[in-house]
Image 1 (spheres, rainbow, N blue to C red):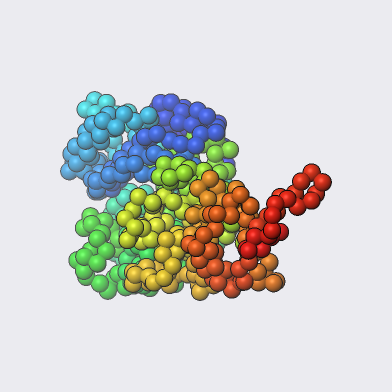
Image 2 (cartoon, helix red, strand yellow):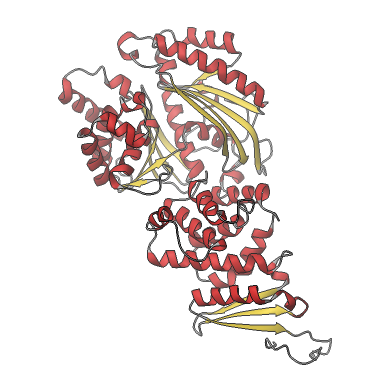
Length: 539
């Protein structure tokens, strides 16, 4: 079965069906979880096995292994797969077949891209792989590769709108996305292996890249504010951009660059010793050898399309294969919230408490925009997932979980916001130097807001194991700068010294006066019941 077997019209949302898959992944439109779904991606440079698990809308990497085989090295010159690459790829796939069998995967798909579809001996090698490993390979066409990579970006960025560029060893794909759809997609030969064979020296290479990009622009459109970069070479350049800038958060997914920064980094790379760059960044020698050519493509890419913003995506073709089969109702879910729900369900002491905590704290955030409310909701869902960590390091564990976890739909500022909030859920003073450096990515007002959220979580999480809404109600009067807690009469014993201190600390962080009342019970005639008013005051 070739790549055309699952082809759909651009922008269509296919119903769950077989295609690349032996059986559908999403047989239920209401699916909330995946169980060991595997994808093997045989590229021109690397061969990778990824096994997804966890939240269906925002799957985590249960297993992820890559080998740089270099199948497509020299293909443009010889027309055949690299002999050493073939040997390494076959050995790697034999290993992957055994691993997949041992993990009892619910679904396994293997796709191959440019090198396998273009090589004279590609079909023969495909048959050899199938005979030696029992794995069935689907070789997909260039436009289909572009579409699947773009869908991978949509897996992490449901609201993404712009141009996706996926660079491999022998090809480079472009796709225009927006409104949750892929609108156009095209493939080219601008992969570093193929560019090694371009004649005419630096001038000829520059001319070839420029002419090719101008041609591609006619297919995918000229004006795109955002450019999303997919592929190992782009991620390596982004990693070096971080080093040049001294950027403190070493998370590549949703890392943002500007065209100006990219040009500075490309010039900086050209002036550095490759061995020094490798030591600095941990980039492999095989990948480093491709960066100079990839950098030339990137320089002209940002020149030809003039994006205002450039983002790095760790999601690509493998995630796009999952997105291919997602029902529309699943695609519309928020990947961040879905991932947080799953983490709460699997790691928190009381799954479901996060929703109650969010509703309890919501009066503090009535006028916040939706993008801020989703972060607050995420923090409530995650507030207890690190409870098993040692108390001395629990705050740091919370920070690291949110800043480094596989969370889609979350930019770097959002990661830091969540990290600071959850850290303050356990620790209200001081930051380790490394955390302080990362916290500098937040504007001061958002840093203060995150700290306030942390104090709110700290109070709400200990106020009632049954759910804080059963113990009382928060009321906030911003014009009067008053934060009020209305206690249920039968639950007032919960409000002891520690709870009182935490409530006062929250009010102080909000620059508000703390007030506490006990709710009176009334009989059927509307007459207050009970004895004298509580010393806390009564309502």
